[in-house]
Image (cartoon, rainbow, N blue to C red):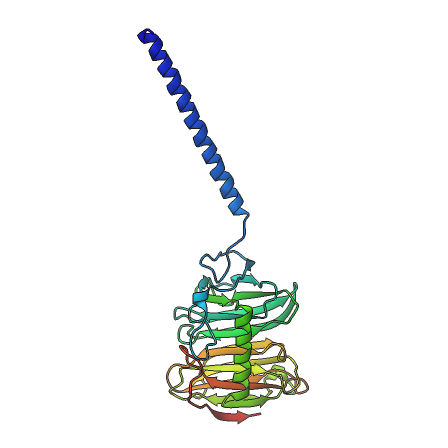
Length: 319
C-alpha cells in the first residue's frame, strides 16, 4: 500500500475508535444521571441513622446498636443523634414507625434560653401529648423525656421552637426497639412504685387561676439530676395537666415545663438536671378538682449509670 492509503486507513481506525469512546462516555453519563434521579425518589434517611434530613415528615427508625444506653439501670441513651432547629417557630415532624409504643427525646442549647414544644398527634388535629419547655439556660438544664403512645394508632411527633430566631434548639429523638421498649416500661413502673418521694396532686376549682394543688420538693446538693414520673394509674386514670417549675433558691424560676398527656395510658418519665445546691422542683396541678388527680414520683438520677442513692425530702406543701 502507498503511504497515502496507509495514512487514510489509520485515520479511519482512529476516528472509529474515538467515536466508540465518545459513545461509551455518553452512555456512562446517562447511566449516572438516571441513577441520581432514582436516588432522589428513594427512601429518606431518618433520625437515629448516620444521615438525617433537614426536611419535614421524616421517618424515624430504630437507633443503631452503639446508641443503646449502658449502665445498671439505664433510662436514656448515652449517645443520641442531635440536630439543630433554628428559632422563630421552626417545625420538625417525625412519623413514628408502625407498632411504635415509646419514643425518647432530648432538648438542649449551647447556653442560650431553651424554648421549644413537643407534641404528639393522632390524625390531623388530635393532640395526645404536649410538653412546652421554657428554660433560662438549655445547657445547664437540658430536658429529657420518655413518652408512651396509645396502641394501634399512627402517631406523629412534632417539635416546634417557640422562641425568637436568635434562640436555636438542639433536638435529639430516638425510637427504642420492641425489646428496649419493654425494658423502659419496667424502669418507669419500678421508679414510680419505689421512688423515695411520691405524692398525690389534686385539681382545683378554677384551674385558670392556678389554684390546684402545689407540691414542692427540695433537691439535695449532691444530686445532679432527678427523674420525674407523672401518672394517674392509681388515682382515677384521667388525663393530667400540670406545670413543672424548676427553682433556684426560694422563688427564682430557671425552668418551666407545661405538661399535658393521657395520665393513665401515657405516663411522662423525664430527667431534669440540677447541678449544684439550692434547687427546688415545684409541680402545679392545672385541672379541675373532679378529674385532676395524678401522682408525682421523684427520684435521683445518675446521668452516667442510673438511679443514685441519696434521698429526696418534701419541701413546702400547699393547697
